[in-house]
Each structure stands twice: as C-alpha cells, then as structure tokens.
Image (tube, rainbow, N blue to C red):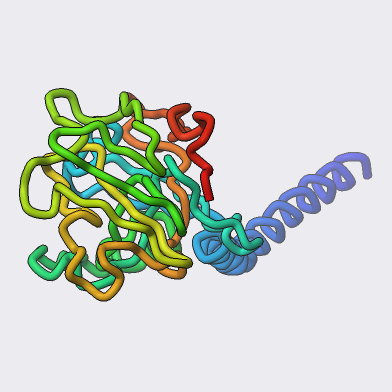
Length: 241
C-alpha cells in the first residue's frame, strides 16, 4: 500500500510537470505577441532608437552611435528648446543626395518595433540654436549670436569656428513661427539650416517635423552619456522676445 501510494505520488508530480510544460509552450506565442505590441507602443509614443549616420554632430555624437529619443513630451505640447539635440524628418529634401539604405527583412522587422534604429527612414539630427522669433546671426568666424547674445559653444568640434566664412555661412535671420533653426556641432561639416535658406522655410525646420529630443547615447557602451542643454542658452537676455 505504502509503495503504491508512493508511486502514484511520483506519477502525479510527473504529470503536473508535463502539464506545465505544455502550458508554457501554449502561452509563449501570446507572451511574444504582448512583448512585440509593447515594444511597438514604446516606439510610437515613448522612446525610439536612432543611429548616427554622419559626422555632422561630432564630437557630441560619433558615427554609429545609437541615441534614444524622447517622443513622449511633444504629445503634451512641449516644443523644442534652444540647445536641445533633436531628431526631425527631412523638412525640404535636405537628404536628396544621400544614398538610400537597403535594410534586410530582419532589420525591417526590428526597426518597425523599435528594437533597432530605423534603417529606411531619412531623418536628421542637429542642435536647436534658435526658436520662433529668435534672431540668429553669423559674421566672420563667429561667435554665433542669438538675439544679440554671443554663444560660448564648448560642444563645437575642435578646430572648427562657430561660423563658416562661405556662402550660407554668413547670415542674419529671424526664425519663423512654429519653427526652429538647427546647426550641427561639426560646423564645417554640417549641411544644416544655413545651407537651405533658399527653401520654403528659409532653412528653418517646422516644429511639426520634429520627432523628439535625443536624451542619451545608449550604444556603444564606451560612448554612453546624457545629452543635456548647455549653460550658454541660459544666459540673461537671450529671451528677448
């Protein structure tokens, strides 16, 4: 009796394990589906990864860096501020001469759910220098001025001057309503607002085209860091309008 009871107990435990094992495999597709939906929702509404394709933001960002972009705050009416590094949709065919990437099927899937930077989207990343109503000016090699205030720009690529003495590099503009003026930190290697002044927005980027603010360098680990707003944009008198 005791021996039989012991065997039935062993059978019961074994049977329970088999049942749980089958249940896990039945639930796995559901769990994967939930994870994919959550990843997609995070990409659409919260945070998205982007890859840096060029050196126009050096040395703040290096080619191949992965940044995480905050897409949530714009949903609550927040607009880009001076000094922020933002990702935005190509506003006026700025990237017409850039090659179009051809991601494979796996990259497309991972990009779609936000687990990889978008491989087939032509987006740009620059620093916000001026917002609507600001007067932004470059004379000679600089300094760059916003509303008459000279900017101390420690983020500008070493060896570059804040302003470029070439066509487009010398300007004085007032940023239109609901727009921003953007420039790369690698001033002599960035085809930014300065070089699109003949376009519909006069070089400015519509706020509606801004995807979000880059908040952190997530990869590679050795380049990890936050992307904070420099103190130069907090100086007295810069908010003159």
